[in-house]
Amino acid sequence: MPANLPSKICEVCRLPFNWRKKWKKNWNEVKYCSEKCRKSKNSKTSD
View (cartoon, rainbow, N blue to C red):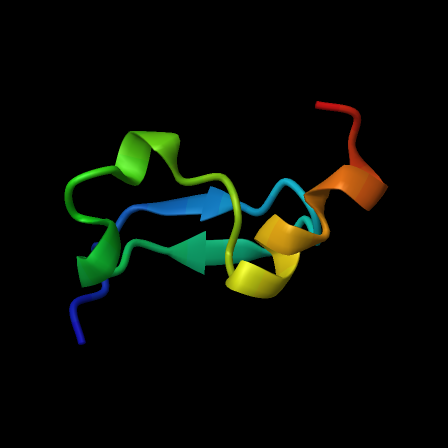
């Protein structure tokens, strides 16, 4: 596993997560580390 993958901080759980192949085309739009965090975004933030 390459160690030089880009990473971000999840907007919900605040934990770091690394780039994944499934996000190759939309990495700039990715804000959440998982589907669980994405679904719970409304209870944590006011978008």
